[in-house]
Length: 197
Image 1 (cartoon, helix red, strand yellow):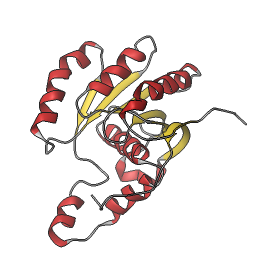
Image 2 (tube, helix red, strand yellow):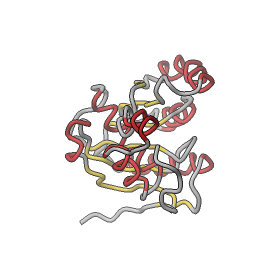
Image 3 (cartoon, one colour):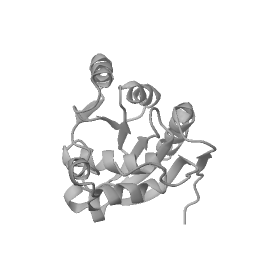
């Protein structure tokens, strides 16, 4: 049996980024994790993580939003790419595997498919938990992290980071092999408060 601390934030959001990264760093120092995936709209959270973890021997993968996102967000990301490359952060932009084409189905016919339902089910633990699972699947599918290995996922509610989980990774085609093994930090959840997306 192992005893580990879990840190809970009173409220979700970007203001928790520094504390979330501190919690992640403390867990990484315990060992057993060689790969980190970080959700990052503009690249700012990925840069903070890369700076924080620069003295650790870990593979950092920044996963950003798809190209269908607002132009301003894409431009911010593009400005940060050279800095991320300098810090040896690997990057991925792709289809959000827990929504993707089902967003088009919902918009056209007003119905949610199983993938959107799965995403909202993960959101009962918090937005960051859903995003952490999603970016892990995306990074595995892109070959940027290994399959079936302990991986740390750092994500948040909106911008920044407020959630850090340790996952046994899986490809999206093998979704049910994925396992959330540890919660390092997360905000208290109020459930899913938005329309299906």
